[in-house]
Length: 454
Image (cartoon, rainbow, N blue to C red; front, side, top):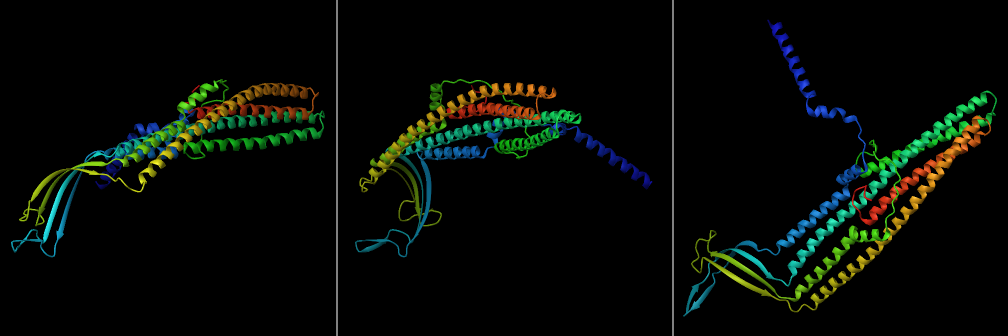
């Protein structure tokens, strides 16, 4: 009987274990996790979005924007009425008295308790509170421009790193192709040497060239890995994380008008927008400093209770409770010229901000022109590199055929092979340089984050 019950327990345990395992395997999360090993290709736009989501400088700029917004909110509330309360106790050694007709009467208790609630509303402060609030709002706008500036720089860096990976991948493939070409040439040379058509030094030269090509392939592979590490660093992921990039290196001619680019930069470049905001903030600070020339008016309304006990329930010496409304004026009309000095300092800051704007506009105009010229140079270099590559391909083909017909030497073939590798490398460098120059021009103009902007 005990054996039968034990067998049933084992069967139940096995049944429920299989059922639980089946339910786990059939859950959507498990099914979705199954193909996780597959690496998806990344477009340039996807890399930019990943970098924007993870970049620490951008996160810091966003936090600074929130800080500025909170400070602006606090400055705005300085113009609102404020409610406060106060409770106090005053203990006297002797009661205060008054003498009338030769008789002395107490007018206070030795223990005095007081409590009040006060509502205070600033009425007029010469525009100080309003201008300070507007200056704080401008700080929020400045923080937003800082966010845009960080984004603009980040997009440029991601584009540059992305194009660098594409370039190094092509150079890596070319290095592998060079090894294949020299390996095929070595087989031809070995065959010719075996039948006595070429001397031994010709065969050895082919082997040396192949060994050098293999070293170049190793170097190209390391450069490709380093380029990926740079991009991974911008994406804030493991430096050795695999990356499959979807975009290919394509040459798309681009001939923008320099004047239009400079006008666009003046309108959209975050640094110029921030400089204009600095000027407006400086104007507000001048007005806030001038507010000290005016008197200050405050309106207060209070409810008060005075008593001789902690609970404020009795006061035989006066009113137990009372209320009052008061309009007060305060004017500091002489302070040894401090207000004048503060206004002068704020005015100098305004002049400094106006000068800084002109300086930044000049610098941006130069950056746009420099980027525009670099783009034109890169485009001309691509055209030359394309022609050079076509000549190098034909030269390699002719020398290979001539070598097989034994009318060319090993040196002719290896030189043609080296020339082809250099031409292809220069071509890829030219394409990458053109794409990078376009990215730098986009940055100089202050264009958006889209990699496909014209």
